[in-house]
Image 1 (cartoon, rainbow over the protein chains, first blue to last red):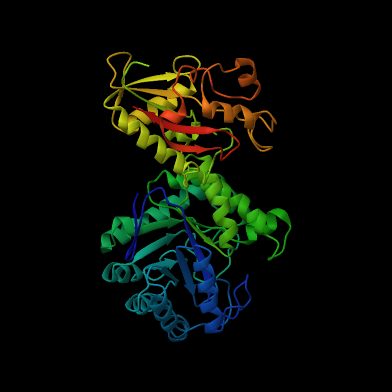
Image 2 (cartoon, helix red, strand yellow; image 1 turned 60 degrees about the vertical axis):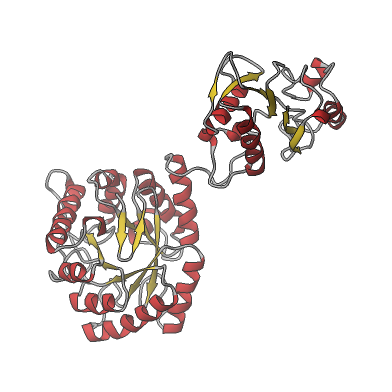
Length: 290
Length: 158
């Protein structure tokens, strides 16, 4: 399906890189490296240079921590979004927020996508997306409260975690549609590690094709997450290879958007798998064909 | 040949749509081939080495289709010969370097008469259908190069 991300359109054979840009002092991977606005701006410049189509700007880390008010969240992201919009008109700007109030403020200054990592915790976010013509990412969190860790969550019903992820993200997608968000502007995300233990995230990865088969474009956010770390016994900073292995599995199944820390490595992985899947010609093949 | 216009192109598989890349590795060659084939009229007889439906014939048919003409067995408005010189011009060439290749190709450039079939086979040349073509000196040669260690000519007679 053609993707409409705010003012930007993408054909249904394109895989997109969404580069993570944290305006936080405490996110797990970069540990505040782009907390300063100029550092975050330099990070955007870097990922644009690396070919990312989308930046995902976040003002609150996902893990539990100090309470961040909506006002504080806005102070971290709104002016920054405006600056990025002005500098890179062709770049898709996504903002990682669950709050409608923040979503409205960033869309007003040029954000194209609202990445609701917390699965619709604020019911008015879809109305903001509809009113602003923004796209929305519908994630599955198993109903947990924002910024809480999964604790003894289980998916005992038939179909397990994947059925739950499909049911919840599609319900969210239908809610967005009913609110007036364009069908082409709705993306679903199983949300690895969110409301999931490592076994759940591995199963979601293995069965990601079932989500793709729903027909909604699928985003995967795998980058350096704990399910990779626990599977391989590796700390943050050592998880790139495992991340790329999981990326390959999702790419073969046809996931469309990859939310990543490492753009270059992920792009190579997805391009390679996209070509294996027959969706992308080789860049330049002459061996044996001269 | 039959008195109609004749063209020569190499049977380069990279010219086939099924082997297209994001960046065309044979852009200049392709452009020259299409230019030559477009001058053969709407009904083109393809003359290629090997079995009917072999790779040379496939490349010829693809070029004919690409210019909007059709392949015919008779009543042709033009003849498309598919063939090329040695494939052993460099160490990276498909057949590796054979020191005899440069002289072999230089001789073909002067005349296609009396080709040594055994030497052609040694040099991985696709020369079966080159014999009988007039000299390249009488043609308009639109491409003459060996970019991958394989000698290609694109030429039009008449």
